[in-house]
Amino acid sequence: MKRITVIALTLTFLLSLPATTFADANKEDWFGRWAMNHDGHAGTLLITDTKADCGGPLWCDMAVIYIDNNNARFSGRIERIDSKGQHMTFYLNFPGNTQKFDAFIFSWDKRKLAGTTYWGGSTFGFYATRS
Image (cartoon, rainbow, N blue to C red; front, side, top):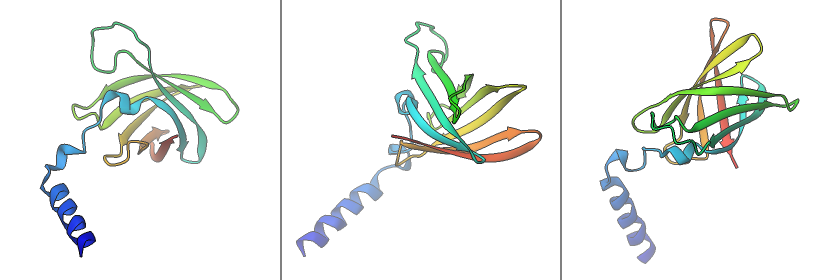
């Protein structure tokens, strides 16, 4: 009986919180080494803090680099992060193709993200997990 009461009180508390309580992400939630797969291409996405004193938008001191499974490195740039911190748009500079990615960090598990990427007029899915 005691266990049921604790579970019920916990659920009541969680359900009474506004939906945005856990939805927002901080800039730091994006930092790290992400095991990424974009439409079957596996690699590592690095999102780091450059420590630059840039005074610009939220992401101006962030860097993005992709390392493919052959250890080739590709630079990138972050275009924007939405006001809630949940959605990042970035580009990776692959040979002959600067590829756009729309990434959404998960609300309840900030070690996962997923989204879409665009190449050759088609839209593809991708996902990444941070260890």
